[in-house]
Each structure stands twice: as structure tokens, then as C-alpha cells.
Amino acid sequence: MSTQRAAFSELHVYAAAGYVDLVRTCLDRGDDPFSMDIDGKYPLDLAIENKNHEIVEMLRRRMWIYDE
Image (cartoon, rainbow, N blue to C red; front, side, top):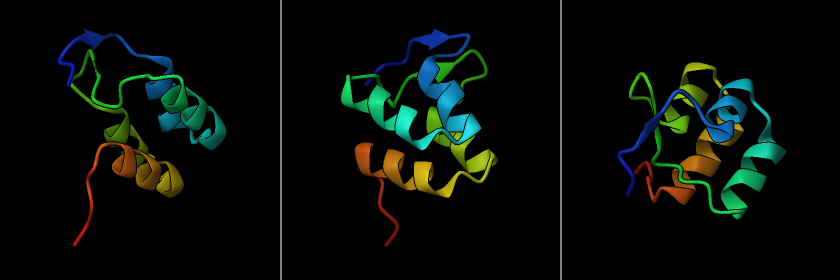
């Protein structure tokens, strides 16, 4: 799990913008869903804030976060 903070990553941008296929591509190539941006937010946080539900579920599965 990474705690490295970048201003933003492609994964952050795509998760916020709702680009499902590009988020999938980033994850498939090994981008870290636990990376934080400069504000301390994960790509999942940005997807939730922007109501990108399909991306939220995709990231939760990759991060092993399940609602019970």
C-alpha cells in the first residue's frame, strides 16, 4: 500500500471524470488504487464525490472494500 502523494495521477483524473474504460486500463496496467493525491484523496474518494458509481464499485473490488 502506497502513501506517496502526487499532485494527481491519471487514475485520479479518470476516476473523477467518470472514464470507466480508462480507469480499468490504469488498474490493469498496475496503477495503485491506494495512491493519494496532494489533498490526501484516493481515486475512490474522487469517484464517490463525482457520483461515478460504476467506477466506485470497480475501485472497491480492486481495493477489497465490500459493503456488507
